[in-house]
Length: 118
Image: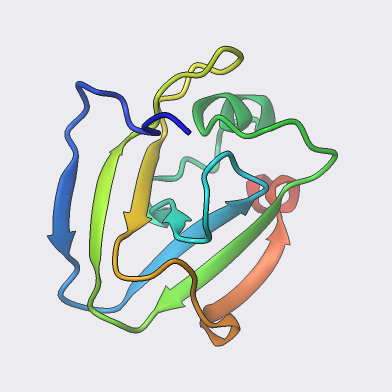
């Protein structure tokens, strides 16, 4: 897989310093189970086609959205999602650098992307 971040985007590596809530949408185009979005930056007024385009989601009948509470102080990298052949990109992406996956106990809510946007 090519770099998921726009080359010119501000990519930061930082420690959160505290627990953080994150959103994960599945399926997505990224390897592993350590790619997230910040709920504070996720615009719920967008229509689903705009979300699919800006977060470069692969074609799917439905998308699962997980709200995750990470209780740890973790290192992450943040940047703008690079465009693909079929999507514009531009959404913010967080890569959890300390782990490839997370315990199911961190999932505090699971819903569909459609329901989350309503």
